[in-house]
Length: 124
Image 1 (cartoon, rainbow, N blue to C red):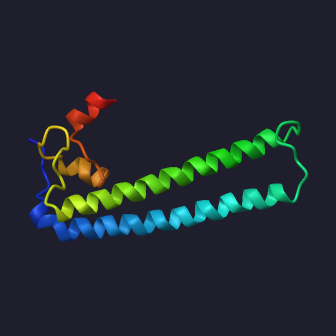
Image 2 (cartoon, rainbow, N blue to C red):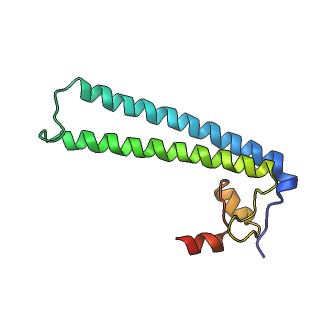
C-alpha cells in the first residue's frame, strides 16, 4: 500500500517546503524576466524586421519561448499558493477529484499536486 502524507502532522514541514519552492521559482522568474528584457533590448538596438530578416524569426521565437517560460513560472507560483491554501484548510494531500489521499511519493515529487495518480492518469 502507498504511504500517504498526513497533512495535519506534516503541515509545518509542507509549508516550509512550499515556501522554499516559492522562493526558488521567484528567483527563476526574475532570471527569465531579465533574459526576456535582454532579448527586447538587443532587438531594439537593431533594425531587424522579424518578417523579412533571416534572423527575425529567431528573435521572435526566442521572445515567444521566453514569454511561455515566464507564464509557466507564474502559473507554478499560483499552484504553490493554492497548495498553501489547501494546507491551511486541511485539504492538502487529498485528491480534488476522488477525495482519496495523494501518495507521499507523488507529493514529494510534485508538492502542488491536486490529484492522485489514478485521477491524474485519467485526465491525460
